Image: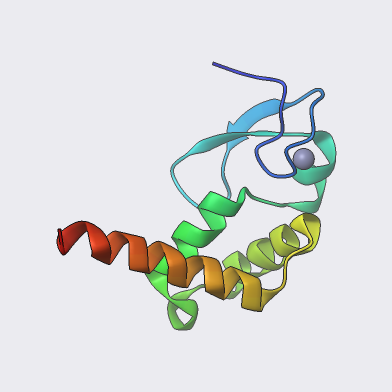
Length: 95
Ligand SMILES: [Zn+2]
């Protein structure tokens, strides 16, 4: 169901649900996030986590950079989020 909160910047307002530039998923984007080509943090983390920086296409890297800029995050903070995701995933198998 479409909401009124942007999945990228979490701002409430008018959004459009559109296909992600990073994979087979759809998210709600405000006009600004769509125009700068930013994607939600979860999609960015999933992309880096599943592919690894060494396998990310330069085009996708520009999407990730735009997303980080829009969210006010550094690449180091993204790497920490990816590392945390990996830890949580691995913990699921150690139970
Ligand atoms: Zn937004």
